[in-house]
Length: 373
Ligand code: PHB
Image: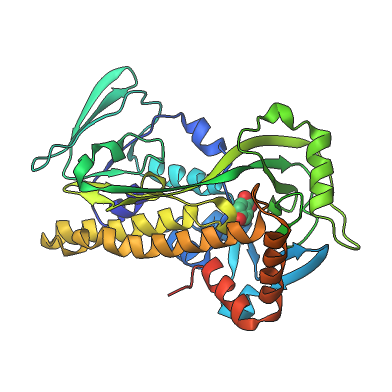
């Protein structure tokens, strides 16, 4: 996305990707786009398929005590969300980049970065069997939580904030029509469950599981049995189907602060991780690079560093808001190993408040759609 936005500003870039094109377009991630993200993609000319295939949702469901409640996002905030798989966004962006003949290199196994303070950074790697050296004005690490770029910030120049949750999510993709028209978040005493979708024919489901669980511990029968139990609600039935993809991901929160040093900038998961409960990850990443593209363009046009210098402080305001929201929603919906009956009742009281108070529902809704000031 950054490469695409820079191209539109007339700024040249080179993208080095460790994985294959096939791997990145098939890796299943989250799928909730805020209206602002949809607007950014559309304005950048990569929103055509999204407009055709994205599912616009005006509300979300919250289920607890076997009962259904609905947060009317559109009525409370004037904004909706769009369900469109993250890997579909990635697919559209890669196509747009390659159609422009852009330097996007896949399967680069050995990307090395040299980012000395005070001089130009340099990237090296093997592209199609040949060494490639890129002398850069700027390097932007968009290489995820496990990427190499963050380690090139001088150790004394930044701080890492971490929080780990004592559970993980097991996610499955199912070849069956979704059982509800909207995303449903369920708080159950056996643990959290989530009903989502990718298309009118594909359901996406998640279950809270133990942090150390492997997929071996979750045969199909156990997955379906837990989903039926945790998502149960009067008069509602979950449609089963063949499980076509499955994975387990631990939940964590992380922030690198600041997100820049000299000519090296971090964006997306390289700089911050949120638990998937608030569906903020992709939206934060798009907001990061939209801001960065504008600031880089300003630097090339006017040689002004003011936008670049403000990148990290402005991004971190948004990031910490999303951290607080994702933490809060995660706490509200999951079963914690150290919770006792008191904690459980407190959680249910909080959920009830959400469904009875317009103020509480609005607070959730404006964070969920990305409209929190
Ligand atoms: C998804 O559809 O993958 C999804 C939806 C909502 C979330 C997380 C993931 O909070």
